[in-house]
Length: 475
Image 1 (spheres, helix red, strand yellow):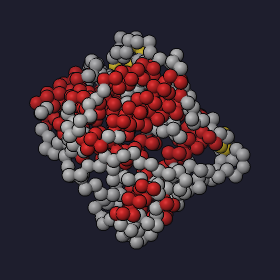
Image 2 (cartoon, helix red, strand yellow):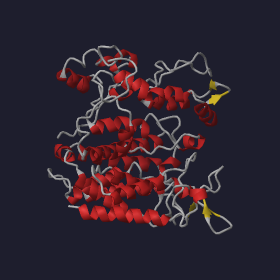
Image 3 (cartoon, helix red, strand yellow):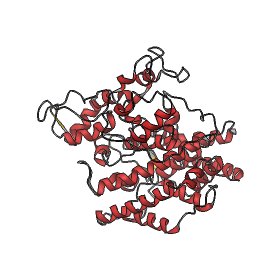
Image 4 (tube, helix red, strand yellow):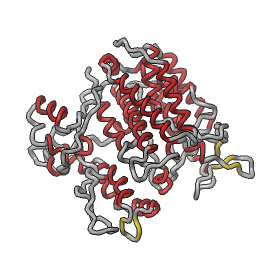
């Protein structure tokens, strides 16, 4: 069975956007009829599927919502209905619209719309269509040419597909969803390719989706793409490539290391979220250092791939993981943790790790080996992440471990496995109307504050069930 892991896509920036409407002819991607929103219809209905079912099609409306207006006002980009800082506004528009060029009617005047006001349309993922829209339907050879030299993105490659997602859902050198935006009200970004992909209202078919390895391969593709995007974002921030970027950047650190818990008079520990003083009953953070730890959500891909290469779990190639590379990665993490480090040194360290990563993924033997990623590899990763959890576990590593185990697509799971996964999920979900998790969990059943969330003991029992099950099935 085919699994696509190709070389990095290169979208040429000199091609112009044409808009999703240019794809909407009934003989192209606009059929078979309006109102269709099912992934089971015949090929050719992509445009109405996107228009009616895809949240990306509404992202321009999101930019004009009351919540967005409030965020832009808090950021100082909007004042009395006028855009007073276009550079900050464009940083938002880069992820909320296909074309982020805006036409200002005068200095400080709120633009009516970007040049293409369609939200995140076809070309945001497939590449600016000027170079290929009139030829990509002429057969496989024309698609190869469009991808190779005319700016089309090879979305059948799972890694390249994940890379396009990560540009917005992680960041890149021309867009930065940072701590200022989070403080202003934008949700923090926790992108997981496999989970997002499964929940997404699709306008395409994946022939490999019936495979039990497909979800794991998507998870790995996301780990690769997230890591690459995070390295690019780190360098953009320290080099101030965008108007909103700065360093130190708090979004680069684990949230719970700074947003500490407060001990109440009763001896219990409460979450100190504004407007929700007793959202959860929790234990104190296990971080005893004065320095906040780097946020590992997008950096975990290095360990996943490198450890798999080093352990020999990925077969089919002669490449072996270099221990010196691991030292360089640990150096980067130490630099990210120390706010006194020079920005130049951090940038150089990130660039060195990025170069090593490219050398690993650029080898044919490694790309061939990635196609062999299956349930046994995913099982080993899940066990590693579950065993590494502290007691009590912190939210971010626990959520990462859960997603790695969830990516094991068991078509006929045992009831105990299903129940344990459900327990972890309910414990990791944010409470209603809250932007912070009620985590670690209470040692008692305080239903007024925790609702349906499990206690810490129940959560630990579920972790034990998963670990025991994975150890039993480890080859």
